Every structure is written in structure tokens, then in C-alpha cells.
Length: 173
Ligand SMILES: [Fe+2]
Image (tube, rainbow, N blue to C red; front, top):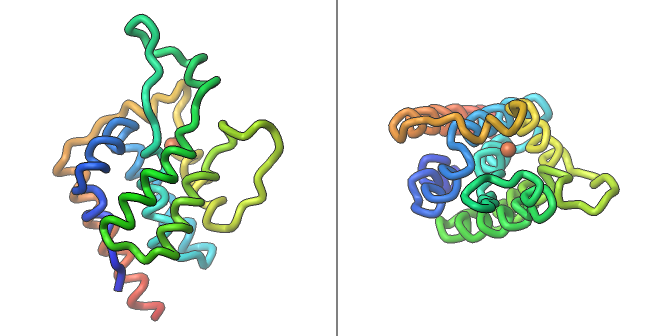
């Protein structure tokens, strides 16, 4: 049994506010990729799917004179740090297992090198999966953040993924 479902996460107002901002379609695509990779590699697919769904929850916008400023964003971005904290708070609030909430938060923290001042991170399998899943859905110029998805379709996709996760976990108990 899982303590929290993707559907519950999605329906929480914090996810509605921030996941929607950084691209709901992208979040769901990364969640599906992470689920599949985790199954293939013998990693907990529930943690992978949750980290995939929440990986960009720390994004915020960098505007200058009413226009998106990519250079400013590149220079000052800490979305992985903010995302790890935000996701952790949300998961704990929803009743997630604290060990799992920490693992998911760390996978979000290390899903990108963008905030690291040089040097590669040595990642756990779960952390590598979330990074890979994100790369699989990336589009040039950050276009993946702007694909839109309606509330109901997103909900359906997440319910479907929840079912797949449950089925997998029941089979492998
Ligand atoms: Fe992403």
C-alpha cells in the first residue's frame, strides 16, 4: 500500500500552483518515463514516478521589463533546491513515509547540474533515473515547459499511472 498517490499530489493546491506553472504535460511525461526506467532497473517505481512528477516544482520565473530573461535565469536558478524543499513539504503534509519523502526530495535536488558550481554529482540509481527521465522529455529552448494539458486529461493520466504502480507493487510483493 502506498501512503500517497500521484492523484492526491496533483489535486493539492501547492502542486496545482507550481507544477502547472512549470509545465503539467512535461511533469506527467517525466513521471511516466521515470516509472518505466525504475521498473527496468529494479528501483522503486512509486518514488521514481513521484520524483518525476514533482521534479520541476521549484521553478519560478525570471522576468525583466516584462520579458522572460533566460540569462538571468541561468545565472540565478536554484529550482532544484527550491523544488526539493517544496516537494518534501508537500509530501509530508499529505502523509508520505518520511524515508521516502527524503529520497524523493534528494532525487529532485540532483535531477540537474544547473546549480552546481562545476563537478559531477555521483548519483544513486533513483537520482539518475529522474535526471534521465527529464532529459527524455526535453525540447529545444525549454519548449517542454510550455506544452499545456487540461485538468481532466492530466487527472486521467495520473490515475492511470497510479493504477500501473499499484499493479506492479502488488505483483512484486
Ligand atoms: Fe524538467
